[in-house]
Structures are given as structure tokens and as C-alpha cells.
Image (cartoon, rainbow, N blue to C red; front, side):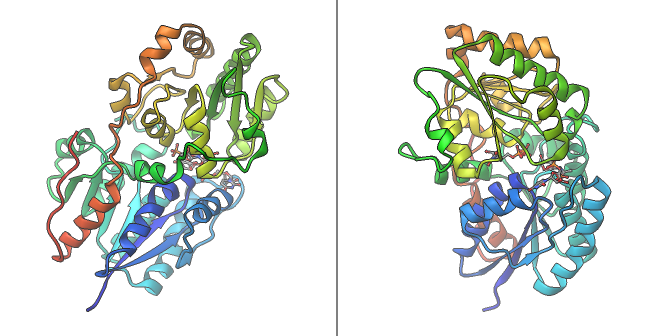
Length: 381
Ligand code: UD1
Ligand code: UDP
């Protein structure tokens, strides 16, 4: 029997965390040959995830350069993908989310007339420049894709409103599948500093910040707010694994480094990060993935952005938009640190983003698409 050659393409940390469980799930099906092509838009942060999930790519474009521009990422991915497609001869290409790798991967697939499955389809802010360039990347991929794996019903509704009416599946987000394999009660950190944090006696705030639309003034405001929070609350410790982007590291060095009670550390592996999140008090972030993971773990999130394409946890009450104004961020954090009732109102586990079976549903939908299985049941809200 000829196997269906399904090539998963990803390049950055979050795509890897959300695609590695799928690469493994596809490999369980005898009808499928699960292939993995990485662009390495991120190098170290990608390799760390591949290690955690023990995945060895079949093809590696190795494109990353320091301070890479959007155009260089896209053009290097696009030409590199020509070689990968010719070498691996996929019957279907899977891309994830909204990065430059996602867009270039889908475009290359289209040029080779290979059908595309879009994992994490249908997220929208309807603001072309925020998040930048992600909102446009995911819209462009919508025009190319054949199958749409929507994390939530809300994401599917967005696509239906845009006139996409075929190949839609509500699957849940594969990040919840990943989280279920990484978080453990008895987890011991490899990063010594994390084992020594006063989880019981102090409030640990987990921070990340990296978005391109926050570069410049917004990032400065965020850093100054974090500094103020650490300086004014003796019962708080901030733990901030700093993204490897030189732009982010410069802002951190300029405005935050040296502040007492602020732990600036290198990026954590996915398992360290997920277990730290499970033990922290509060999450402050502009990340997309953290907005999905923290609610599942019952941790309140202050989002350091004006908008979100993930409104489900805002509706459920565990996520609030704090924006990028220094004083507003400080006030919202103060409230959650000092007002137990306000904190308790937000700190409950909700799982609008998945039930841990997203990868199974996606594999089933692919088999169905190729006439090898039943149509999967969609995830119920
Ligand atoms: C990218 C994605 C963004 C996603 C984020 C996840 C685009 C346009 N942006 O943004 O959607 O939220 O990844 O983190 O696709 N670097 C390293 N080593 C690494 C990773 C990055 O040194 O392992 C440095 C390099 O100097 C690189 C820079 O970080 O040039 C920025 O990386 P890039 O992928 O361009 O942008 P991100 O902000 O990471
Ligand atoms: N993450 C990680 N180590 C870190 C910071 C984040 O493993 O030091 C994980 C995080 O748990 C989530 C993903 O990386 O699964 C989010 O990636 P990121 O914030 O870089 O991108 P985004 O989700 O905003 O696209």
C-alpha cells in the first residue's frame, strides 16, 4: 500500500511545540508517512523543542540569521521549500499558525500544487498591523489552504463569515495535547534557580514579551511597568525567560536588568516552561501560546497587548487585556497582587482551547480527506 506522505513544516518555537505532538500522532497511523521539514527560522529555540519531543527532522532549511527581516525569512523559506518538496515529495503539507514560515510554507506548497492543511486556522484580530505580521500571514494562508483545523468554534465561525465553507474542522488546539505530556506534579527543574524559587511564600509572576508590534515605545513601557511592580511589592518575584531576539534583549538590558526581585533567565525548554507556569501565581505576557496554556493551568493572565485573537479565555474571565500603557499595566498587576477576591475571580482552570485530542482529530481528518477513514467528530465547546 502506498502511504500518504504528510509533511509538517515549522520553524519557530511555538510552531514546534504545537506541531511536534502532531508529527508523532501522524506516525502512529500505518496509512501515513509522517515527514518533518523545519525552516529553522529559530535555531536554538527550535532545537530545544525538537529535543524535548525527541523529533529528528527529515529536512532542515537552517535559514536563521541574527536580526533577520521579514523579507529575508520569507524568501529563504520559499526557495528552501522548493528543495524540500522536491526531495520529500509530500502528498499534503501542514503549516501552523501565522509566522513567516507558515506563510512561505503554504505559498511554496501552492506553487507545487500540493494541498495544504492549516493547523490553528481561523484566529483573527481584524487589525492588519496587530499582531504584525501575523494577522496578514494567517489571512493569506486561509486563501491557500484546503483543510482548516480550527482550535475553537469561534475560529471556525470567523472562517465561515469569510466565505470558507469546505474542509473546516473544530479540533481543539494541539498546544493542550503538548501540555498534557509535559506538566507533572513531581517535576524537578533542570534549571537550578527554578527549584529554589519561593513558590509557597511569595507570588511568582512569569513574564514573557517579544512581539514585533511592541518593539520600541510599547516594549519600554512594559519593561518600566515590570520594574515598578518588582520595586513596589516585596512579596513578588518576577521570572522572565528572555527571548533570544537582540531587539528584546536590548530593551531588557536597558530598562530592567539589575532590578531586585527580577530573575532574567535564558529561554526555557518547553517542559521547564510549562511546569514553571503550573507553579506560578500570575502570567504577564504578549505571547499567543501562553494565553492558551495558562488558562488551562488555572493561572490568570494579563496580556501586554491592545487586542487578542484568543477571546475565549477573556470571556471565561481568566485573561485580561492590560495593553501597553505603563500605568495601566501597573494598576492591573497591583490589583491581582493585593486583592485576593479579584485574583480568585480570575484563577480558575478553563479549557476553551482543547481537550488533548486535537492531534487525533487532525490525523483522522487527513485520512478522511484521502478517502481512508471516517470524518472525525468535531470538538464540542
Ligand atoms: C517569530 C514569529 C512570531 C512568533 C515568534 C515566537 C514571524 C514574523 N514572527 O518572531 O510570530 O510569535 O517567532 O517566538 O514569523 N533568535 C535567535 N535564536 C533563536 C530564535 C531567535 O538568536 O533560536 C534571534 C535571531 O537574531 C532572530 C531574532 O531572534 O533574527 C528574531 O527572530 P524572528 O523569528 O525573526 O522573530 P520573532 O520575534 O522570534
Ligand atoms: N516557551 C518556552 N520557553 C520560554 C518561553 C516560552 O518553551 O522560555 C513556550 C510557551 O510555553 C509556549 C510557546 O513557547 O508554548 C510560546 O512561544 P512564543 O511566546 O515564543 O510565541 P507565540 O506563542 O507568541 O507565537
